[in-house]
Image (tube, rainbow, N blue to C red; front, side, top):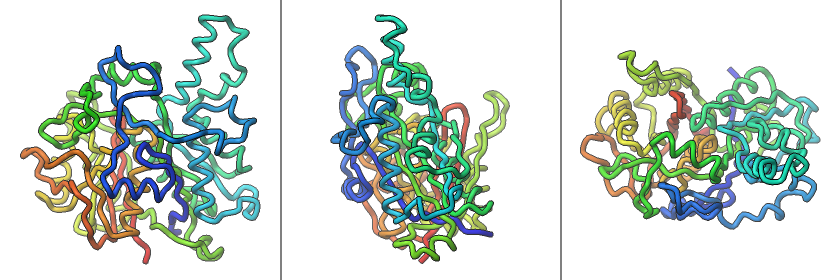
Length: 404
């Protein structure tokens, strides 16, 4: 069956802009978590976030696009530009309908939407931007990337919250197998504004700790919720033969396996679907649990959810049977951007033979019988499993494999 490989990465993360800056910071355990600055959060119970610092949109986005784009979409456009450049792809040289775009979303561009609704309520309809008709829309990242680069291949958007980045990559592979040479895929999100903040607080899953180094501690005894973040990753997924024919400068790895499941209804007595997603992804890749060299965990930071994940990992791999890491402790959970960033991080780990650390966590709680990597660890890595769970019961698993 046609192989789908990753030939380009574009990363906008709270602890680094650009792939190599992000990767250097991640290996060093440098966190991008801190007090919220994008709005006044002092009256809210949760006040820590992972914000993308140092990003000046005007340095990356044409002036004509500035009035019609949200902060989220600007980050996504920038990441897509970097992924295409990294892959060395000139879109004009490919068939007109050759490249598709599949991204993940959670609630759309909520910061743009909030601002325009405030204008409506406080000033009147004459002050609402005409761009409100589409700039807030959950499919806007896919649309703007497609338009900017004149990409007319198959496009779409997946709304499975934190699992969405993996789902988008999985769908990109489907398009590759149908004969399309390349697909831009991944997720970038940004909801650090009151309209994006309040629904997350209402979930009861957010951390209320003000110390950024102690606010998000998945698998630790002190775990008490998650910290939101913004940013994510865009990947250039390409048919292996096409990449070879054009002499792609590098191949980060192969999208070897993918699966998604949905948790059963609460009270049904049936187990969560995360383990089944992992097992199906392994089967899709044609491998067994013994072939996995590292797991990039979903790492909710919510005690009950952490317990369910560590139990699934122990059942699948045995107690401390495989190294487990959660570098998202340095960025926060990026909603639709989180799983895509984890997938990109896993590919970088395979490339350099090093497992990034789970920052701020010194050791897992005794109930979690997993080999949690808390300091960067060199290892011979060939295959990685990336797990993600989205609010509402979504589960996704991705197997990435080194090709050299």
